[in-house]
Image (cartoon, rainbow, N blue to C red; front, top):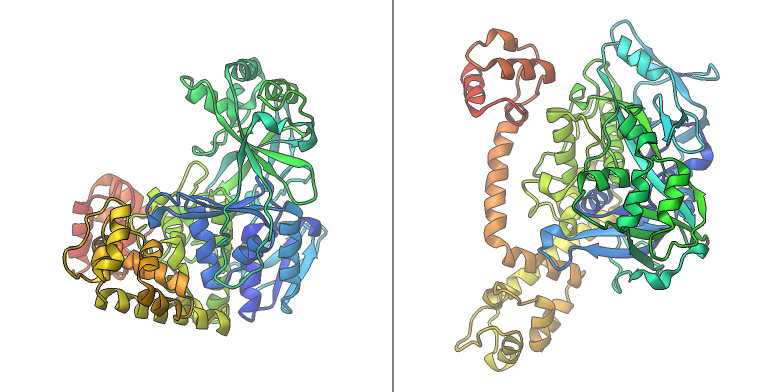
Length: 614
């Protein structure tokens, strides 16, 4: 229920897997609305979009079609940190999603708001009732309500009900779920002002161009733009901060009218100047909203201060002296449900065949929502057909890390994905998401033969190129000029190309230019560029990859040991009181999940292993 990023992925996946799906949304004109910034991906989030694409989701394809700028973030760092990001045309993004959804025959739409779930006496969901009184029966229901559950918008001392600017809030579902035994809470997020780009002086800002080489998100051959829009960087200053501070006594954040916690890693501008009082400036990213609009998004200036304070302060930013607002920034407070109440399929523990995905689970971000929707949609279909669940471990995908964090640790602030949350991030790179995940998803009907053929081709070519690099030796006369040019010690005898490649500073693309025969062999391979990149990473990071693979296998052994759902932890007095309380509340499904619960010690796990005959 809800056609945001989670709802779109859930509906598309379920319908493409053969289920009859009804997507209920409050406004058919705002499908997959980019309510905040017009961008997809970024650090860790770009990896998630590539994983969604590898499984057969649509976010990567839609992002590529609607992109206005592409950048590979962290490309100067190791391959594990590379993160694709697109600026997108907001309207084109939404239109493309709708086109994609309408092309799926078994997916139908209904414009209304859901106010009540139909739940049987034995706690099994049976359908929904809308505000207009329409009853829709269903074998499974996925709630993807975003920020709409009892949503409230705050601008200075003004507050009113709303799911986002211009849209009404949704009422009734929270109250019913609480009556059914769910634990609900409040969270907060915010968005900056939108301004008229014609009123800005870009000569006072830094230019941020897109990359010359556009990789994109999808592993399929999606269309890429032939030109890109420019973004800009500006900075606040002490005068801006002083003006903002004059409105703190009217800020809902500081007066206590907002009870929900906001995202720690995406704070409002008033949060930033309070928490980082030693900094006299903060970076702002000036992002176009699309190809054919002058509207600009001011990334970094999220605020819920009175509109006149926002306006006065922004005019003191160099380049914004004559700024014209389209609308001020605002904060929004909304209901969420503690995700420890979910299985790793995202089905709720209390109500069978009821799934939660997106911000209802306490996450923030389009990418986090989209991947949850995809997993919920897949598992809802498999559940009603009595098929095994589709789950991803922490060593399988960033998606696995996200879901495991949510159901195991819960969250009391909006959860956002970072590379630092993934302990196996060298394994979970953006470039190998297809190799990792497409074969796993091949049986669901989401992976086209074309996509599977490309993955198999990439794997085979990677093996062939790797073999060339390990078996062929370098010719001294050819390779020494290159080594000398980068300050690396020249060779005195023949060695394998793989040994040279493992040296710091040596890049295969540069190295191959000095070895024409080897270059020719590599270029004859299908998908040569992508495969060569895979082979190079495998050589450069061989030791790290082996160690992470070994650690992942150890953890997976723990994740395969299932815990009986009826176990009474309160009777196990040999484990700590905190552990008994946490285990009773979360009810972990495996020993691995239990070991990742905060407050459950290795000693507690040892006791459980003994009791389970391990």
